[in-house]
Length: 336
Ligand SMILES: Nc1nc2c(ncn2[C@@H]2O[C@H](COP(=O)(O)OP(=O)(O)OP(=O)(O)O)[C@@H](O)[C@H]2O)c(=O)[nH]1
Ligand SMILES: [Mg+2]
Image (spheres, rainbow, N blue to C red):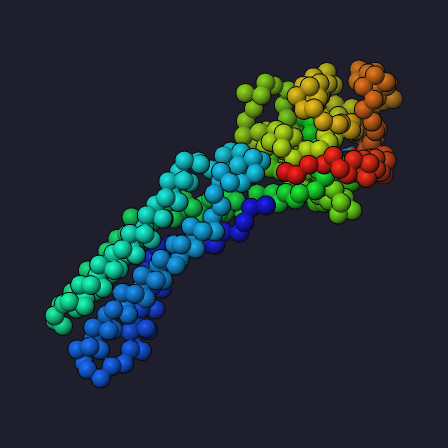
């Protein structure tokens, strides 16, 4: 799971808050001696304004996850979404800013303590100017971290539980199957590449089913960032793969292409499979029989289901085998 990151405000918002708080704190200072009071007010101003900015930056710094410490799945997924080098640089810039301001405050506190009363205003103006310029200097980094936060917010919330990943070519009915099995509400459209990121549904709260973007039949190194999300889910999250065929071929990909992808995935990922032959409501008996022959199921022993996600045919049997599999294999499921 990705930890929640606080919103990163525009640097002007933070500065205004710092100056406002500093003024309020200074207004509350009381002392008998007027010179002492003036000096104390300035000290409080510097301390409060710095504290507001430093606390704010430290909070961002502490709450933003260190990408390298996340699980390999999130780590690689984030690499597809943001520029990890820029992310690291921006985090380093934020750290630099609060460390610098903490030192700068100590320096100015000394100056204030040893200064003449008539110099106090000038010192404060100098200090505020520098505080503003430090924040201004890192404003692009703060904007970058905020952009990352928005991207991270929509990352899938993967739980540490038995996981089935649905895979197949675009438009074959993967999202429709997720919906039929779990009641989740993914986007379903009659054109390919509808699903562009990972979607999750749960079956009886014991198993997580992940819908992925369609994979094309092509070499791994040719896959784009959207397809790579599916590959990462298969590589890091899947305990079992549910491969979907569209036997009606209305998805736009002939069965020989679908078979080629299936064989590739089957060879690449050493995991148990379930096969759903989908859209049987639109296909001939003959094409179903031929596909099964091609799959050579008697040898491979992979469970195959003839289903129609749209007409809810065969879905109950798929659910049953999924749940049975979880019960039988409880100990084999590993942590993500
Ligand atoms: N007739 C029929 N249509 C189906 C069936 N399952 C899905 N469809 C239709 O096929 C189209 C694609 O369905 P999706 O579930 O979006 O397919 P997908 O594999 O998730 O597609 P991408 O996310 O683009 O890869 C939609 O128009 C669905 O309504 C089915 O069993 N029968
Ligand atoms: Mg989809």
